Image 1 (cartoon, rainbow, N blue to C red):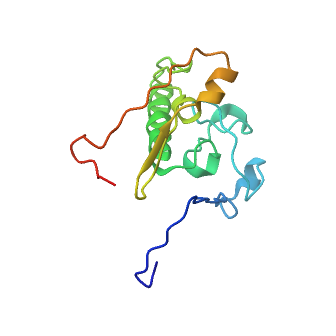
Image 2 (image 1 turned 135 degrees about the vertical axis):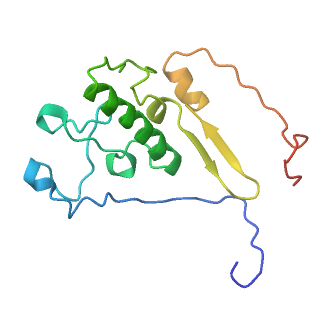
Length: 150
């Protein structure tokens, strides 16, 4: 705590809320609603804009509200824009070179706490619910170089 005291708890809730900052971008001039998220396809083109000239990456599209995912989306969108500008084919099938599949199918997440908590992809229950064969493996990471001992 700010006093230097430690707080012990059985459970902690980490919650964040993000609102897209699209209120003053002039979105109304292209038929979009200011202040709202921008729906995109898997190449990050805004779906409500005719001719597909507008792209949206990061928190503004609401797909994966994580900094590293925004950077991932920007790399994909940049490659898509370059391919389209150069007249090259766009590989927009799932996991294709120009498809943002990981931000909906395999999102890595981490909470930098003590201990750190990380996850990627579906939970076991979600995977089973979608008919996937699931094997769960637990591994003690305390012996890994750089791991903290708690």
